[in-house]
Amino acid sequence: MIRMSYALGGSFAFVGVSCSAVAVGMIVAPAAPHQPSAGVAVLIMSFGAFLVPAAILLWIGTQRRRNARHLDQVVAMGQVSARLPLPQLAEQIGTSVPRARELVLEAITAGKLVGRMDYEHGVFLSGSAHTGVQKVGVQCPSCSAISQVILAPGTAAHCTFCGHRVA
Image (cartoon, rainbow, N blue to C red; front, side):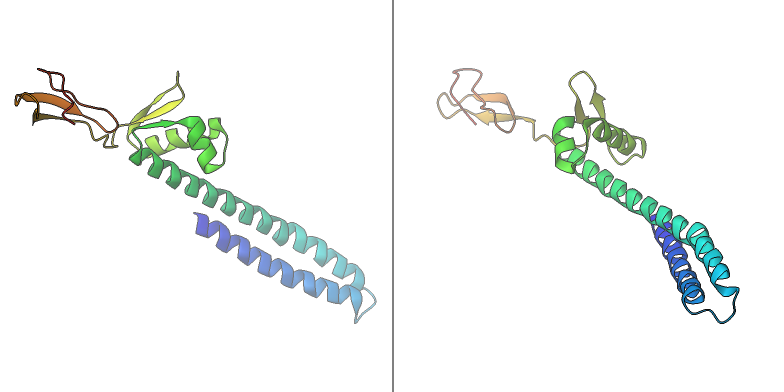
């Protein structure tokens, strides 16, 4: 859809510029006495029929491309982060918090992102990001007992028997 907007906009711009050049030629160097007025009519027609629609189509294509790029960034950030605050997301992609929320919901609706929104705290909670939390049996170096501890990044695990740090 983005490419079609650019292709149509570019085609309209090419035809519009060509018609405008012919019209200017008719105005500047007329071959007949009625050509300057006809040149003005062709110039107005080329702006209305070709150049204005070309500008609109090119603008739509640019907006859609930016939206697709933002959506890809939201998906990438949402897949690698277990907890993604919307203000941080909005700052990262250079948009407002309500727009960031719309992009997250659009990604969820499209099936590109798995998780849920916590509207109370303004946070996206990913359902697919691996947080690295696991429960393992570890032998304590102090008391030699095997403790079932939960390992998570950034947290310390302690032996359930003697309290010694095991990880």
